[in-house]
Image (tube, rainbow, N blue to C red; front, side, top):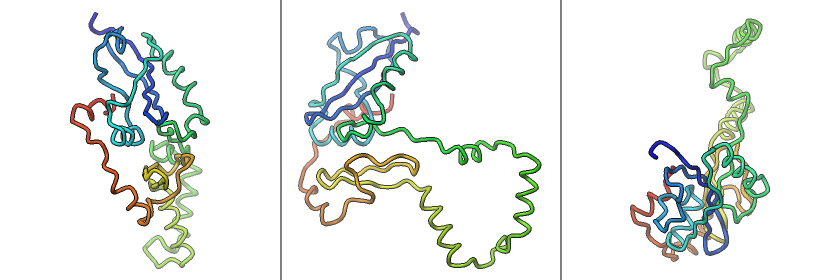
Length: 208
């Protein structure tokens, strides 16, 4: 019956044993069991890299659980994607960003107390640099480091050539090193021709 949804917990595995876990919403209670091609097998740069490396037809998707209760399926996914699982290099899921409470409060425009406002005002009056005066080298360095710490960071894996970009508050993945892949290593992977994906294949890896 149209309008009734089922939530499918699935696992997509690459030939090297690495896996992606996810949830797909469908109106088909026999999704993945009726012989029809799967319309969704997961997403993210790590899974896409495996599809390019091996070919999407070599990725195997298994249906682990189906329920009409999203909360039930979501809990099961959370039980799988523990910090230990996400730290495993064989896990193709990207770690979820941790919320920085102070930044979140600032961005959501949470109202400040009158006492807090007065303190900010006093601080501004005492700030000798408020009109654009030249700051000290130490202050410039501190500002530069603060800005850099909030920017997304690149990580690389020397043995596979994988490169991923994580938000500043996301933890580094096991086996990945900070920074882009060094030039001396890039030449080792340029010669490896990735398996091309069709538009239909890419659609199966878009966010559901």
